[in-house]
Image (cartoon, rainbow, N blue to C red):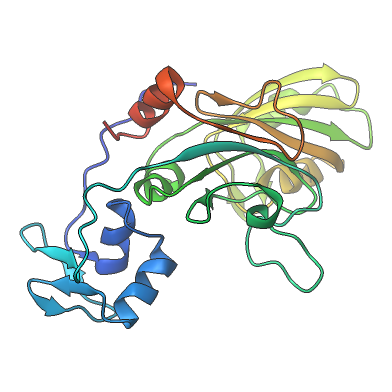
Length: 243
């Protein structure tokens, strides 16, 4: 997979909640709350939900400078059974499972029955730049199936699979056993790998994300987290166009 990422160029005008997220001030949902509370100024007036920001506009936080915010980045090994977002009664989400600062949030999702690498940060710029379909950011997964893989499995998976009317992008597949394989994707449709395997007349019984770009799960125990820093962080931010 080509890991060269084009510079993420802001597209103006953009909704003000997206602007605040790109600037690392808040998530989009959190930005909506800040705007509703009257905490955001757009060209000197109190911003409202739905406002659009143009390139020459001035956006400020009322009575609070945000330029010195310290960005934090963590890798977390999500266990099976933990919800990424919006837990229901009796469920535990990532924020409850990971002992991390309160203002960090998971970028992207892993479904309840899947495990592996999640990146958490308080840098809202990461969300759009990592998850946007405009960029081919590769993610690697380890997969086990209920039935042996057919001889043609690798060829058909790599070429793209029709999942309910959507043809998946080309990917890289490496068989690791009669009923296991590694797959590297550059997209992330909902339950994509499970749906691809189902289209190949098989069933996923274990699914673990092992890598996002250059950030790897290696050696990180289930339920544990570690900071992303130093050269690893520099390379990760460079991949997604943040200098």
